[in-house]
Image (cartoon, rainbow, N blue to C red; front, side, top):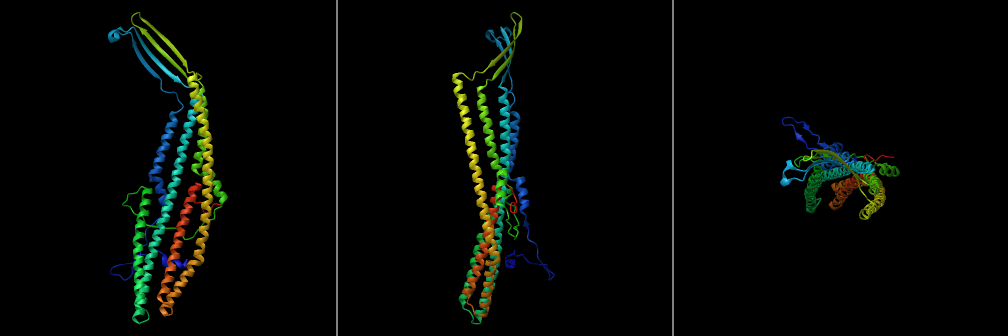
Length: 422
């Protein structure tokens, strides 16, 4: 767009020493896709989620198997702790055996919990990328604002020169020169705040990338074309199946169903089995003993606790169902809201690009021509200039809002690059 020719990045110009030719270096840029790949590799939250997955997987492998057996040795009837004169020597091997279905259910629960960690990992990736995209768009906005202010400072210097020339020919007052100088000073002051914002945004991005604070970033680049042709029904359907948080919450229901079954299995007995080798040195006796035990969960003092566990598990199951519905409603509402906001902002940006910005630029050019010819006073020129600055910054701010809304929408849907999903 022609109106942005004055707003492109100002490239430093350097002389080549002995030669008259000029070298215009290309400014360093930073591609968002590379930053995303770097965050996937180095972001501490993502790395921690990977370790959590590994821990849950390892835990699932140890669940659903018999506990370690117990081996004990006893010397009985020793006079004055004299081991050689003990009446009996016993070597016991004991094993606790839960009801078989309990082990199976425990293993299923552990596998579901490991699956939770997987979807938690995906949700953290989803959130990190959204934060990175939002910060990247913010960096673009600040850097474009800096470029705009630098160009405005140059223009205001030009206006001050014109006013000075007219003042010298009695075509303008000293007030015109002073107003131009004041406006330029205000721009320089604004640049100080923008540089601070740029450093702050870069610090946020560095933290997401887990880079050293001494590292730096180049210019953020956002395509000039505004694209958003996604279909709302398609986005809602994608969110229902691909948003990791919803998958996580649906698995919570499955987990609680298994927990409810497991609580009911507490009514089933557990077993104990043992093998004993006994010897009596006094009468040279050697023999074996076998023991077998069973728990009695229906005794009055154990039945009440078992029943309470079952009721607790049932309540947790119903709670997880309601929470899933609430999560789904929240996600669907967020997708709709962000979709409407993105669509409206896209249309507003098109209006700015097609009419508001060109018209304000034309008004400025007309005011400048009028001031040069002496038919317009400096206040009219200054007002036209401020109008261009205001609408241009409004455009940049609206583009920032659009990009951040798209990032939030992608987070809510659980999928990247949704702008053209139909």
